[in-house]
Amino acid sequence: MQFNRFPISSDILANLERMGFHKTTDIQYKAIPAILKGEDLLAIAQTGTGKTAAFAIPVIHKVHSNKTSKSTYGLKVIVLTPTRELAKQVGSVFAKLSKGTKASTFALYGGVSQDPQKDMLKSGVDILITTPGRMFDLIHQGDLDVSNVSCVVVDEADQMLDLGFANDIKGIKTKIKNHRHQTLFFSATINPKIKKLAYSHIKSSAMRIQISPEQIVSKNVDHFLVKVEMDNKRHLLTNFLKEQPDAKTIVFVRTQLRVERVAKHLAKNQIDSFMLFGNQDQEDRMDAIDQFNKVNSGVLIATDLSARGIDFKNVTYVINYDLPENPENYVHRVGRTGRGTQYGEAISFCSPEEASKREDIEDFLGREIDEMAANTSFLLEGGREALEDMEISDILKMEENLFS
Image 1 (spheres, rainbow, N blue to C red):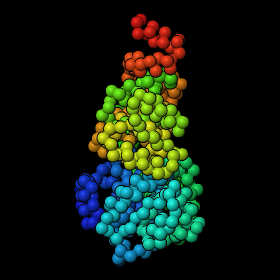
Image 2: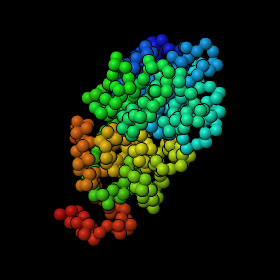
Image 3: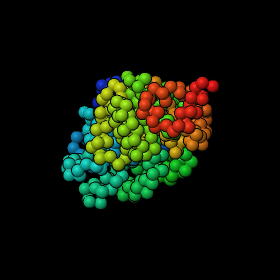
Image 4: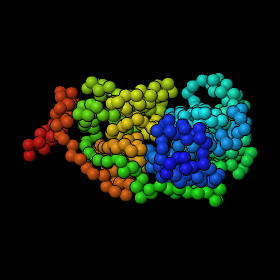
């Protein structure tokens, strides 16, 4: 369906045209009319299907159409996100879609100075995209008034609720005077516990929209798994990347320490990489995202917490260097590729110690992941360094397998 079939502002339609968006995705087609009507919503759809625009378009239109002038009339919408990076990304979408309208938008997050943010809030903001921590800091300091908010959007709802932000959501809603305000939850995955929490925050008449529940990952992503010993993963990764010099690849690992170790190993093999993890300085995290998005080929090594929900550009491969602890995170990881109409591949390195995690992921997906045979030459092509890192028994075993 064309966007111009919706009763939305001509300014928003012009912005969509400039952004190259003409037809709705399934989630946009179903969510936009419901939000325009004032319905509460729990919307679940695959990553990369345009969920941000699905709530941004109607929210901006409602604020725009209810204002008599460009002068502010107080904060009306709060969009909650779990991470600073996602707040910045969602804020960028809102800024582009609201250009030329009466709706003013602002992304608020920690890790940067509060003073410019306070000045911006004083000048008047209609729609605030924010992380809970910085939002409550400024509420408690008296610099942010949320009492007249008429709509609360919770993005990445499963992560927001699962990470313990449920009390923050409840806390912000108790500060809103209008108890009939609209509440919207958007997520790529949901489970019974999170669903129950979400419904405790919305009206009993709330709609639930679920797109393609039989396939929770995009059909544009091919999935493969390689069985490999834990100590050999770095050599497999190194040679894979050397064979794909023009690709854009995100490598997911478990911890910050493993991010640094993998990056160091790649550097020793003349492969540059960007790093993204939770304890980085905010400026370094934003810079890593911006720089990786600018390049046509390259490698980003990341943890789940820092990369969840980020819209990276033109990613060819997602490599699960470590299988995720939570099978739902597999869906969010592989969703960094195959976005929109693009295609991508997700390749998982599975060590014997991770067999149970593989089973959990396949149970969650409702299908088995195709296995690829790991070419044993990756251990030899790693050169002297690869052999020096191996135990004698491993080398003998490898030779036995090669010549048996």
